[in-house]
Structure formats: C-alpha cells, structure tokens
Length: 152
Image 1 (cartoon, rainbow, N blue to C red):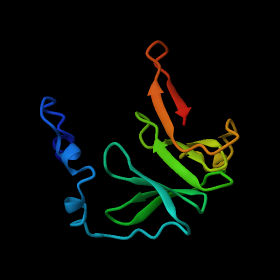
Image 2 (cartoon, rainbow, N blue to C red):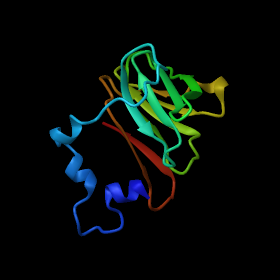
Image 3 (cartoon, rainbow, N blue to C red):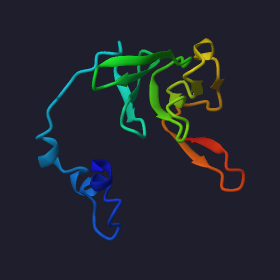
Image 4 (tube, helix red, strand yellow):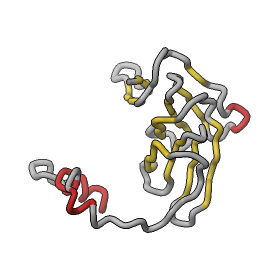
C-alpha cells in the first residue's frame, strides 16, 4: 500500500510522491542509514528490491550477487556470478518468485542465474558485447508471452 501511494498508482492524474522526492536535495539530506548489510567485499553497484519487498538483490565489484533479507539481515543466497569484471546491474525477472536473475557487467557479459540451481551459478553467460554492458531491460513479448532481455 505504501509503495502504491509512493508511486501514486491509485490516482494517475496527480504527480506522485516519488516524482517529488526524486532529485530533491532537501529531502535526500534528511535520509539516514538505518542498517548496514555487510554482504560484499567490494563496491556495491546495484541494489534492487524483489517485487514483494521481502529481499534485496545486490551486485558488486567482488563479482557476487547476494540476496539478503534486510529485516533480519540474513543472506538467502550468495551467488558467484561468472562475470569477470564489476557487476553494474542485476534484476529479478518478474513473475518468477525471486528464482531467476539477470545481471550485466563491465566485461560486457550478461548472466542468467536460476537461484535454485547452485551447480549452475556463473555458467549461463552471454558474451554478446565487446564493451561494457551497463543495464539490462526485461520485457514480455506480447505475441509469445515469453520474457526477453535487452542490454544497454
């Protein structure tokens, strides 16, 4: 409900709280660190919540993806990504119950990870870029109803 209010999903004709907070330095200056999750050995470059708001997925210069419950500070999964350079973005694929992740990195690779198969961690890599892959966008093809990813 709070998330819906934040993004103003119930009244699309009004500007959302999100748009008012975004880039507002006076509000951002009031933020304080509530908890530190020391789950990486390097600089963290990407953090994203899962759709239910129960877990955080993070990716780092340590080449690992970590799924953490921020409320009890427990690591649910620590995943060697297979990337050879810094991870720049990682995302849960929607409608997969936090079980599928896509990530990209400085080495130009894109990794697909199925959380429930640790023996396959880091083994599903796509080396489709000669330079850095900064972002991964996912979408559902309207005709096939299948998920697809696109790199930027």
